[in-house]
Length: 204
Image: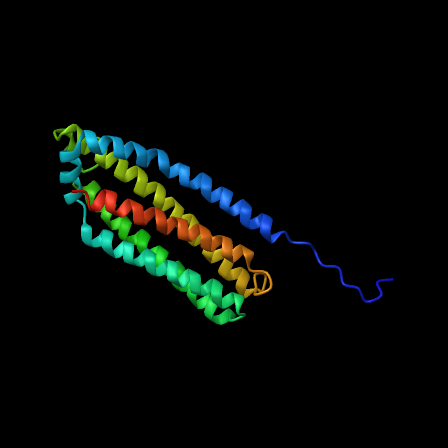
């Protein structure tokens, strides 16, 4: 006999958030090593790094920075809306975040394609006769921005899945920790780019 007592599954929200923060900590160190290497080589090949930085498209880099900053805002609004049980607004903001992430990747694709078409990649013809530091710069540029792009792809995939879960009421105002964790991941992606943008596009 149940005597009208309802049994609900216990959910460890604190544990989920701590686990997410630990995961983000490991992600931070994934970027830390290559960025440290960049810092060392920048002092060694300062002139080549500066010249190579000026060859990047500052306009696209700036636009992508604005896109990711805006996406952080839409992600935060989506979480806040769901917490207040405003599901429709939360879904719209998730959709906006998803679209902004896709636009970021499209811009990066065209930027990479332009460099590859001119042989400006490690081992490419355009860099073969250049100073050693130029090849190092582009090697780190493609590796770090490529690694970051994979994280953006993972982020928008998670956002798409969570949008579906919100739509199906599997994530709601009463159970929104998964959306909060996705938001933390997305903010990490944005913070990493905020650091990558100046070290590659604004070297002086």
